[in-house]
Length: 174
Ligand code: IMP
Image (tube, rainbow, N blue to C red; front, top):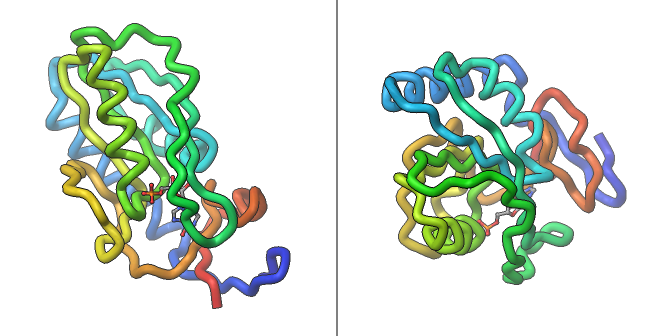
């Protein structure tokens, strides 16, 4: 598949993604029994993951969406953008961040710091994808669906220059 100037090939099939999403959801259902967590999904990349994850959650729960982006093209710019759009009171509530991919981890580290100022009861990170070899910061990632190598990927919500979010499978750059 060609997206702009780059070629991509299927890397993770939808069925395999959904299996891991269901596994992580059942871990959350078990760990948060008796609680009513607030899921905070990070737009835009996590919108499909969040929809699939939430439909596997059997707990009473809320979901809200925030924005925070640091990516342009295939290389991290290293820029950290402020979190915007937090319109739910998370004071004293258990929060689960729903993220598409943790790369260097700088975005998540910054978001954790921002959220802690609102005095939540707890904050856990739930990511669809993790590139373990690229992590630059010490980050406790409690829930992860899939670990992948350092290659650039797209699909299932993730983009290359805003394109390619609308595929069922995850693709990797050729
Ligand atoms: P980090 O701050 O370096 O961890 O970057 C995290 C953000 O970069 C994610 O939320 C994605 O939006 C973006 N990102 C990182 N790697 C990829 C990739 O392989 N494909 C598409 N977006 C990516």
